[in-house]
Image 1 (cartoon, one colour):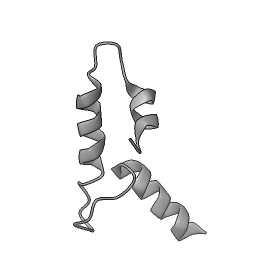
Image 2 (cartoon, one colour):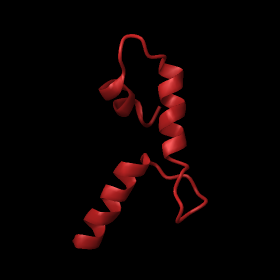
Image 3 (cartoon, one colour):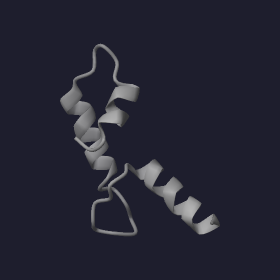
Amino acid sequence: MGNSWTLASCQQSQDRASDLAAYVNNLCRCHLHTDAATLLPLLLHLAKLMEEYIA
């Protein structure tokens, strides 16, 4: 899974990995500026765009 590092960083003992995977997947699809899914979840995608804009 491409976003396994995200799951590992926020998973608690009572969490189900499948729920967290679905959450991250939804964050990759909830952008207003495109219909295509992104490789990164929303906040990381926006941070990358901002970094590219500043550079």
